[in-house]
Structure formats: structure tokens, C-alpha cells
Amino acid sequence: MHRWIRTAITRDIENSEQESYLNLSIYKPDSRFQTLHRMHENGMFHNVGSDDMFETGLNIIISGIEQLTYKFPQ
Image (cartoon, rainbow, N blue to C red; front, side, top):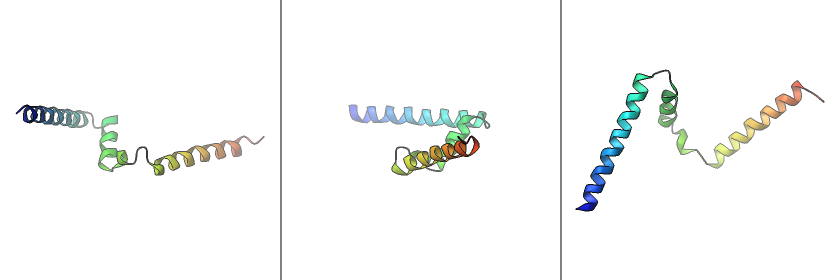
């Protein structure tokens, strides 16, 4: 019985959190919540911490360094 009650309460909390998140994104369409919602829909959070994201981050950093060396040669 206790497990069922705990599961029901947890489900209610999760549903209310999701509704709150959706309400925030509805009332603030130009805010960062819309960006986070779009990232979640596109599956970006599944890649967080993966080797692909790490490699992408390194490529961005290296590209930025290369641009600086071309812009300000020694």
C-alpha cells in the first residue's frame, strides 16, 4: 500500500512539474524556456555527456583558436 501511495504522489508531482514547465513556455514564448523545450523535443539532452558532444565542443574551441590566429598573426 505504501509503495502505491508513494508512486501516486511521485506521479502527481511529476505531472505538476511538467504542467508548470509547459505553462511557463506558453506564457513566455520568446524566452529561454522555448529554447529548452525545443532542445528537449530534438533529443539534445540525450547527447549531453556523450563522446559526440565532447568532440563537437573540441572542434568549436579549435575553430575559434584558428580564427584568432588568422585574425591576429604573430
